[in-house]
Length: 207
Image (cartoon, rainbow, N blue to C red; front, side):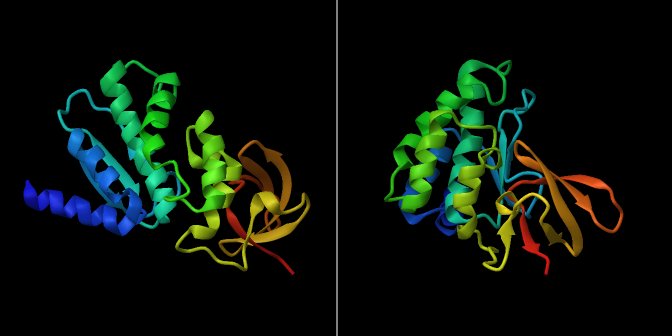
């Protein structure tokens, strides 16, 4: 068990801000779970699914997140675990029980000593009524983006482009047509097909 403790502690030292390492480790020690740091998954930053047939639950987080995004995602997923343990498995995944638990668990690290000032100010607002994902809060996603490990300063967020702007994404050219909450309807120029693309996707403006 001591070797496993060391592995988990070293993982937190690598992936979360230094001032939050001990707290993240303690959350795991209090109610242990299987913890995996996984490859990049474009559809999600982290994952928790409550399994009633398993004594030990599992949480996974993408490996390539910034320390601040990793910390938020980690506590988000631990809050799922704690909420199901406290209130039972019939609660809604992102219902009031989860929101209360998430706020409680985030409070000890909700500080500008842990997060950069710009992230901290937006995160305080976000935590008043946390959404199902960071991506669902466009302002929070935007302020976190420059801290990403793969952030490229020559790219723009799709949400920041004006309607009608031509841009490229993964080698394909699109036109921004219509905003729908956290996604944007875009037309691929070569085919005329319409696609829903995340509003905080990083894109390159076309010349």
